[in-house]
Length: 123
Image (cartoon, rainbow, N blue to C red):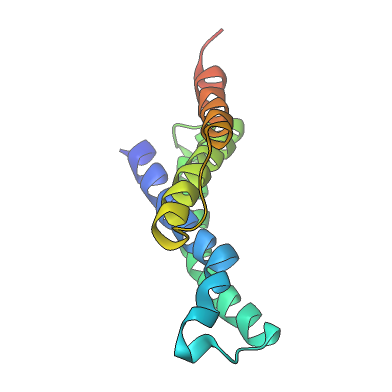
């Protein structure tokens, strides 16, 4: 159950992170965001990052093997990277419809997901 909670919290965390890092690129399309300066954008992004950390820290804390969780540090990082790419792809498809994901992006992302298998495999 700790593993599922860790993955769920990392997914929520990465959703906030993606909006903090890339969501501001859409602000100018909305009336409230047309005149925002860079400092305002940074403050908004920091606000989103706060919510990212509300989920990321407990995910890693509870998921870490030394704290009674099921994952090693390397496994936690690998899971996080794979989740980041999945969340990023969905975010791009939903909010940046003019951006196209090509076959090379999908192959590259797939190789990173393959890394999850390689890292979790008991050799």
